[in-house]
Length: 399
Image (cartoon, rainbow, N blue to C red; front, side, top):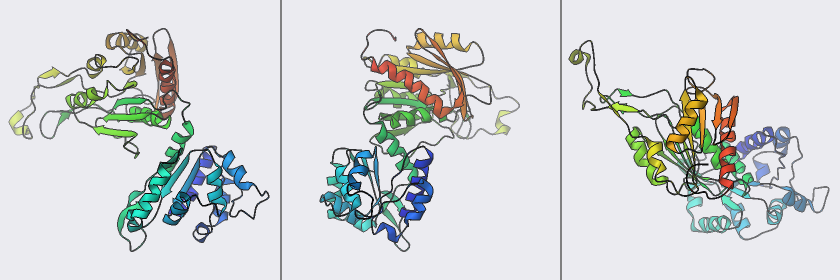
């Protein structure tokens, strides 16, 4: 199954514009043939050191690669790679390449747990530019039940390859990024709450794009329909919260170490002064239910005083009118370097929309953000934030 999933991976990479060269070992050809890969990549599949046009094919493949993905990596292949073997086209190519190498283990859970396999995994993980991706935990081969050893899904390898390709060239590479996203829920009783329609998609797109650019990302996520990607916790950590006060409590400890802070969460400005301990029944309430609301803490404002020197702060403003002026006011009051101003009440922007539009307001300029996917907008916002980070440490007020 893992071998067949790699056909999908090769297809997805090709559709994104990559030139995909596939090298199949003798064992791999027992599971999936060259024709499947040639059909999705449009390129010949390499299977042997001796059945190629050039005696130096491994040199060409290794030196020409921008990223190498070893999937599925069996226990035997990992042992051969850890020992530095060079007895087929794959092992010789990987000895030559200076590109990042992603290794996706796939095997029985007992084989993965074996001390020798773990030792080999450690050797590979310690090689410069090499990274183990997985294995995951789930259903194994028929009759083997569930356990650790399942190859990660192609989507994960696709994302990991994107991050590897970013290398160390992006201003966000190696930086610490904090993103708040989603809405908040303020309890009325044990069932009802005061909230909003935020899905959290915009913030998650920013978090994912930052991760793809090499950042270490922490996401403080309130309720919403968007699902955070399944990425390694050592570089993409998600803290889930419900209320504004919980979001504040989770956010403040992350602020001092953040190189970039993005406040994309739609936080309730007010909350019920007191939530009922049980579900409030209509028979107990009557025709009217009056609720006293009190102000919630302003997370973006409170975090300003905890920010480290040189930290870049990005805010969001969802408005029905005067977008740019409202964004300028918010930037000044809350100490943001950049504010993304989005129009409310539209189907092509803001809440519950896969697209967004608006303006990016900085110190001296306003950039229109035309209608586009939220993923594309995330890239434009991070381009601007990265440019500010690249200028180096600052002092005083936002630029």
